[in-house]
Length: 455
Ligand code: NAD
Image (tube, rainbow, N blue to C red; front, side, top):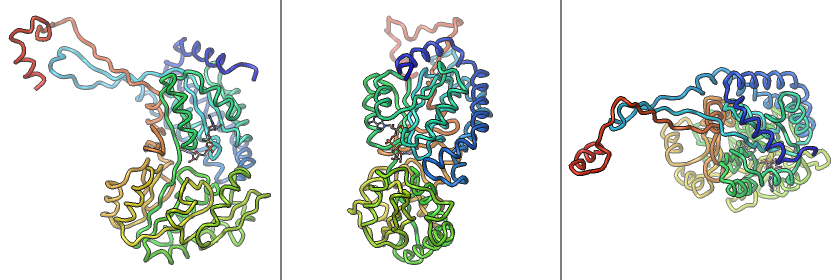
C-alpha cells in the first residue's frame, strides 16, 4: 500500500477538522454522489457478487438495496440534524435544554463477505449522514466485490474524506491498532471479540453486527404452504449464507411431517430437480466453508438434499430431521444451506430451549395464535423478531437492525444509522435574567426547599 494506515487517518483527521462534514448540504451532496455511484456501478456490483458467490442476478440486486438507505437518509437528514428541545425542570428556570447530534470524527467500517457490497455501503450511509470521515475495510474473501467497492469509493470521494483499504487479517489488525471515533464491525462473534478488545485500548466505541443461531419456531396452526415457502426462501437465498437466515427449525411435533413435505416441495419449486443446475441457487464462498458445512450433513436423517460437489463449491439445499440439541450442527451458527429440524411437544419447553442458548440475531415464529406471539415477545430476547415470515424484517428502514448479547452491540438502518454515527451532545442554556440563591452556601434554612424541589 502506497499510503500507510496511520497517514490515511491523519489526513482524515485534518479533513474532519476543516468542519466541512458538519455542513448538512455537504453531507447531502456526498449522499447523492454515493447514490449515483451505486447506480452507475450496478452491473459491476452484480457481476462481482456473481463471481464471489455465484449469486443469481436477482439476489445480487439485494446488494443494490443500499440505495433505499441512501434515499431514506437524503429524505430525512434535514430533520435528523436539528437540535431537539427537551423539557427542563423548575430549578433550572429560566433556561432551555437541547440535544445536538454531532459527528464523531473518523470511523472505521469492517465488513464480511456474505453481502459484501451492501454491508459496506449501508453503514457508510449512516457515517456520511452523521458527518463523519470513514475508512472502509471490505472482506478480502469476497475479493471481486472488495475490488469494486474500493474502486467505486476512490472514484467518488476524496480519500482524505472517505477511503477503502483492501486486504485481509493483517490490514484489519493494523487498522485496529489505531484510534478511531467508532468502529462498526460486521462479522462473526469471535472476530467481534478481537475487535472489541482492540477498541478498548483506545476507548473506541464499537457497533458489532454479529451472527448466531436464529431459531424458527413453527406452531401447528399455520398456513402450511406460505410457511414452507417463506422458510425455504429465507434459508436458501445466498445458499444459506445470510446472517439472519433461520438457522434451525423448532417445530410442533403434530405439524412436522406435513411441514417437511411442504418445505421439500418448495425447494423443488424454487430450484427444480437438481438445484446444482438451477440459475437461481448460489454457491458456498470457498472450500474452507464448504468443508466445514459438509461435516454437518452427517448429523441426523436427510429429508432432502445432502449432495455436495466441492469443485463447484456446491451444497444442495438440505433439510435434516432427527437432530439432537447436542449434534455438532447445533453448536455454532451454520451459515450455509443446511436446515436442521428439532421438534417440540410443549410451547413452554420450546421457549426454554431458546432461552438456554445465546441471544440470537433474529427469531422467527410461525403461528396464528396471538397469545403465542405475545409469549415469544415477552419471554425471549433476540436482536429482532419476525412473525410469520423470515428475513423480510431487514428491509425496513424504519426498523433498527442489530443484535443483543452474543449477536451484537448497537444497531443501524434508517435513523438508527444516523444515531449510531452521532454523539448526542446535551446542551443546557441558562439566562442572565435571574439568579435564584437556593443552591449557594450558606445553606442554612435552604434544606427544606431543596427537599421540596428534589421531592
Ligand atoms: P469474519 O468475522 O470472519 O470477518 C469479518 C471481517 O473481519 C473481514 O473483513 C475480515 O478481514 C476481518 N477479520 C477476520 N479476522 C480478523 C482478525 N483476526 N482480526 C481483525 N479482523 C479480522 O466474518 P465473515 O466470515 O466475513 O462473515 C460471517 C459472519 O458475519 C457470520 O457470523 C454472520 O452471521 C456475520 N454477519 C452478521 C451480519 C449482521 O448484520 N449482524 C451480517 C452479515 C454477516
